Image (tube, rainbow, N blue to C red):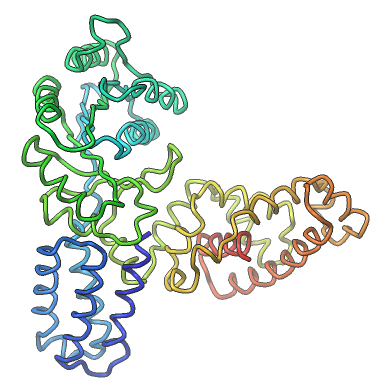
Amino acid sequence: MLDKLTQKVTDALRFVSGKSAITEKNIDDAVDAIKLALLEADVNLRVVRRFVNSTVEEARGEKVLRSVDPGQQFVKILHDKLAAFLGGGEPAGLRLKGPDTTSVILMLGLQGSGKTTTAAKLALRLKKEGRKPLLAACDLVRPAAAEQLSVLGAKIGVPVYRADGPELGADSLKVCRGALDYARKNLFDTLIVDTAGRLQIDEPMMEELSRLKDAARPDELLLVADAMTGQSAADIARTFNERIGITGVILTKFDSDTRGGAALSLKTVTGKPLKFTGTGEKPEDLEPFHPDRTAGRILGMGDVVSLVEKAREVIDQQEALELQKKMEKESFTLEDWLSQIRAVKKMGSIKAMMDMIPGMAERISEDDINKEDFTHQEAILSSMTRKERANHLIIGPSRRSRIARGSGTSAAEVARLLKKFEKMRTMMKKMVKMGKNPAQAQAMMARLHGGR
C-alpha cells in the first residue's frame, strides 16, 4: 500500500535527516526529490506544484532553520502538508439522518470500479454500527448486477430490493422509487442505491444519475473509484462532481495501490473528501480514510493506531492480557499459537500489518512473506492433539510422522515448525520486556508465522 511512494519519500528525507542545521540547499534537494517522487506516483501536476510551493515556503522560514532539531521539524512540516492535501483532520464520515428517518446513499462510478461490491461492504459497516440498511439494485445495464448484489446481500445479512418484473426491469428510476417506498414502510434507516456505470463517462449515464438524484434526494453521493488508475481517478471524480455533485469518494483496491496518486490528488482536484478505502476482497475490508495516519505511513512512520484498532476488532481484551502474561512467563503454547494464527488471518493482509509498524515496510517486502507457510502451519497445528499443543516437548519422531501424515506435510516441516516456535517464544518474551504493545506483538507474530 503506497510502497513505492513511501520508499522514495523516505529516501528524499536523507537530505535533512540527522542534520544539526539545515541549509536552503538541503531543503531544495529534499523537496526536489519529493517532487519527483510525487510525479512518479502519478499525482496530479497542479497538486504537486501547490504541495511543493507551500512546503518550501514554510520550510525556509527562520523558525525552522534555527530549530534545535531542524531535520525533525522538516519532517513535521512535510507530515502536516501531506495530511492537509489528503483531507486533513479526522475521517470525513457519512452525513446521515437519525434512525427514525430513511437516509439515502447513491453509489456512483464507472463500470469495473467495484461499485456493487463496495455498496455491500458499506451496508455491512453500517449494520455493524447499529443501523438498518437496505440495498437497492438499480444497475440495470450490467448483466447479472442485480444478482451479484443479491448474493452479496445474503452473505452479509442485508436485504436487497430488486425488480424482477418486466414492468420495472428496464427502468432504474422506478426501481429506486420502489426501494425508497419499501425502505420507509419497513423502517429501514439507510437505503444504499447501486447505480449503473459505463466503461467511460457518457451523456446517457449522467442523465440517468441526475434523474436518480432528483428522485431519491440522497444524503450522500459517493463516487467509487479505482485507486490503481492514479490521477485518472481524480479526473473522473472531478467530472462526476461537476456534473452530478458528489459528497465524497471511496477508493477501491487501495491495498494494491503502491503509488498513491489518486489519494493525494482527490481532495485538491475535487474539493471533496476521500471517505473510505477498500483494502481487500472480504466484505469487512472497507475502512474509514484517515489523512493524518496515511501521511505518517507515506513518511515511513507507520500507523500503530490503526494496527491497534484492527487488533481490537478480532482480539478479546481479556485474552490479550492473558496472552501477555503467558509471554512473560514463557508459558505460551502451540494451542495459543494456533489461536493467534487464526486471529492474525482475520486482521487481513500481513503486508498491510507490517506497513503499520514504523520502519517495518522498508525492511520487509511482499516477497518476504510466504503465505503458503501460514496455511501449512495451521494444518500442522490442527493435526496435533490438544495434549501435544499444550506441551510440545512430548512430540518425538513417531508423533512428528503422524502429524505430518495428518497435515499433508513432512516430518521435517513439523520439526522446523517446532524449532520456529521455540525461537518465537524467546523473541516474544523480549518484546514484552521492551514494552511493545499487544498489536505490535501481534504483527511481529504474523511476520514469524508467514516469513521464510
